[in-house]
Length: 101
Image (cartoon, one colour):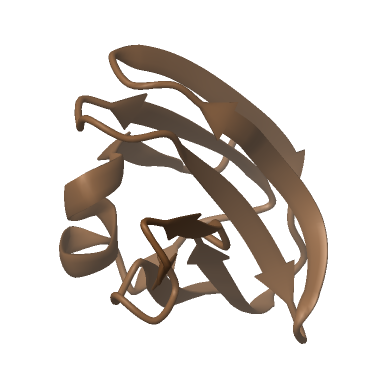
């Protein structure tokens, strides 16, 4: 059947994510309980293969995808400019790597 990688609270996801999950069918549940908009981008070899885009605060969305064995990354790739300051969510640590077994 595969894994549900868990209810991903966007602000905690990148610190508490699983490092290994069962495939091939995987469901990601993104729960943004934070105060900013985020996204959950699924990457394989640096290329985007899936996305929960524009996840507004206090919203929950899911993404189901079939993944072959291998290494992947989840990331928030939002880059914002506010008051002349750039905030790059990836650079702030909002990414994690995992392996599909």
